[in-house]
Image (cartoon, rainbow, N blue to C red):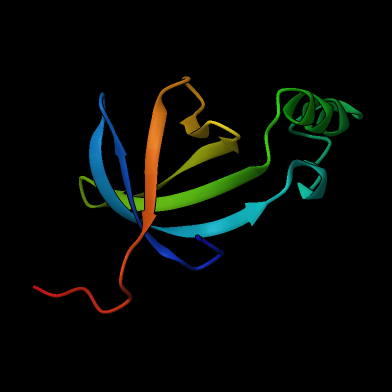
Length: 101
């Protein structure tokens, strides 16, 4: 089971495989509000309600390196597994904290 700080391998048929770290992991109800300059008041509550209505159980922010830059993407977990925001199914597995060469 993955948790905040876990090293993970993330695979998808379209994007391939990356090694990353779970930077944040929350149930939809526990997602923080966004500052007013990023969205109108009430937007975060509506978003949380939509995620719950769609059966989302967890929202993960996962970082990895792409072309030398650290990037973060969002993964959503429901009863059928993990998905990215484009609707592609992901396979996420925890990696050993001491990877062997």
